[in-house]
Length: 224
Image (cartoon, rainbow, N blue to C red; front, top):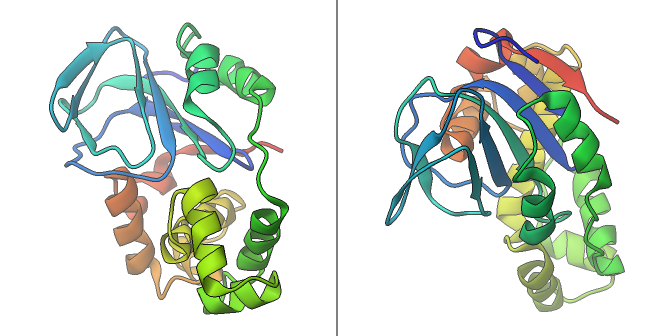
């Protein structure tokens, strides 16, 4: 297990694992489902209308939340809603030990969602364009749909607009480039962000942490 004073980030295709300490976060919401396991007892998390104190907390996609206290030792699983439904995540993780190796093995066994082939095609087209400008109308043309049809499919199966999904996929690509060893500025440019400050603002908005303060101090690993 990673020691308390260390942090680790393991990145897979459709989820990532983080081990470390909770930060000083304000209320934020992110696209990924987030399952958190306390390493030294219950976690204290504030939701919109309640406070939780439990060894396992699952925050669903786009649910506003914040840590009630900083520096809580934890392991967190960030799982993409495109790939995972909440019930199988909860079943796989609720009783799991807070150990990266065990959680990675369990995540490999969780059933993935099946997307409409047109959504899959649009996602592949989106990922190919991340270094430049991505427009919903262009994606719709590439998959032979009208813009309204593409927007309805994304609303039903993705849960985000094309614009917000582009930002999420840019963030995921930037993290992968950083994990591969790219400097933060190069990772930002390689994922289509204007600069490292834009990347850091996005990380802070989505995860409540600063990329420039956090990524350099993590043990990084890519999972395939």
